[in-house]
Amino acid sequence: MSSRARPFLILALLLMLAFFLSMAIGSVSIPIETLFSLLFSGAANRAGDLQTFATILFQLRIPHAALMMLVGASLGGSGAAYQGLFRNPLADPYLIGVASGAGLGAIAAMAVKWPYTQLGLFAVPLAAFAGALLAVLIVYQLGHVGKIVPTTTLLLAGVAVSSFATALTSYLLINSTGELRRALVWLLGGSTMTGWQPVLGVLPYALAGLAIILVNGYPLNVLQFGDEQARQLGVNVERVRRWTVVAASLATAAAVAFAGVIGFVGLIVPHVVRLLWSGDYRKVLPLSILGGAVLLLLTDLAARTIMSPQELPVGILTALLGAPFFLWVLRRSKTQNYW
Amino acid sequence: MLNIRSLTCGYEEKMILHSIDLALQPGQILAVIGPNGAGKSTLIKAISGVIPVDQGSITWNDVDLTALRTEERARLISVVPQARNLPSGFTGREVVSLGRTPYLNWLGQLSQSDEEVIESVMAQTGTLEFSDRRIGELSGGEQQRLLLARALAQQTPLLLLDEPTSHLDLQYQVQLIHLLQRLIHEERALSDKAAIIVMHDLNLVARVADAVALIVEGHLVAFGPPQEVLTANILGRAYQVMLDVVSDPATGSSIIVPRL
Image 1 (cartoon, rainbow over the protein chains, first blue to last red):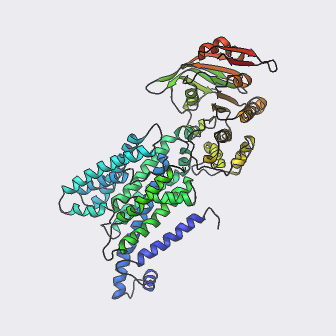
Image 2 (cartoon, rainbow over the protein chains, first blue to last red):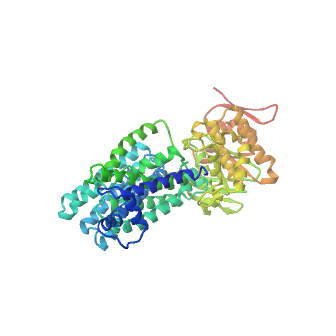
């Protein structure tokens, strides 16, 4: 096994394992042999319990796991992309307020139309995208010193934008009646939608965003030397910045629109990737995408089982995990720099 | 050759350089000198396309450099910046390989010939030993030599150096100067390279430069061979100090001695 492929292989295996566990475990456990027979034999002669298991598996578990996978991948990938863009390892869609911006956009759209309808399915992610993009532009404007965004101003600007967006979101929620109150659970990262609809909703945005992020790996490497040197080395800095910010915001918005505000995945995963394997963005980006999917599948599994049969919103767990991690990284970053 | 005609440039609020005229032949080293804040680094930025040109023109062999796309320009001009705030996680070899950027596709995949160029410029600059070291662990002088190697890996006819010797001890200053002389002067017939070097050490300037441009407060106040520019009169006025210029009996070049 070549050492280049090893991290990808490890994460791919972990992803398969996590996906498998997500299918089997939940408030109702599906025995392994039943799971296999459901997955690999036809729909014929299913009766009684088997039919119940089949419904749980194909209508609930698999789409839910697929959604978590896409959302985790989007958060991991966009976190790594923001870090490259801001040249700061603490950039995370949640910490820099982009997720809150997307949340506000989504809630604003939901206040008009709850996303069970065709129009809502289309409008909510679009509004989340607009919110995310607006938030990241404001954070950059507030936080940049010259062409770089130092940790202090980045986090302060993130806090400001995040608080503002959250306040507006709360206002919308309080002034609403009935259905929008369910959005509170959604905001904490509890998926309120089941079945394949949200998966199909998130898919195009996540794929487009992540694909654009991936092709910018090499230019992001060069960008770590600053705009000036990157330009002297032949990189069209504006184009890379523009595409990366749009793509990362698109991926974040996709995640938020269909799974709520889930923090810290975009911080934890790229960090672990850098620590274990490489700082090269051509590897950090794809590995963070894979790793984000793994991490969210596993935390979601925990969120669904810790207080079973009650399900915790997964965002609570990632925050419990992420906040201490964040402090640890902050401490480390005082003495050590990655690229 | 490089031709700069009535160049005015700077930043939106404030123009830094005013109506600069310079010319540089292949095989020549042009030293840019002047007090701090005179606009020397701004000149480097303007030629390398980092800041826009407000008025005037910059051409290389009649090609308008300001009209080129970023990667086209990076095949004609390479820059050795000052070694400051470098991302510390890159290895020496990774830093140098970035010099191949203008020749690579979006994946940044290095070909066999790219690898050979990297190998050879690292040998040339004595940086092979830093191949696998992270640049955060290296000294300022060692980082500076890697940045020189990176610029050489761009294989450009025009090389711009922004105070490349300021971090280097005497040994590496001499090495760098020798390397430049070999690249620009001795291989003149082969490569047609030219260099612009921003420098504070006037004695080094006197030894290596074929032409000297003195910039004071954004204006070109003198431009010509070292003997004509490096005079007590001109330098004294530019730097606002009293100084003596004597001739080195061994080499015949000027030695500038400030009066304290």
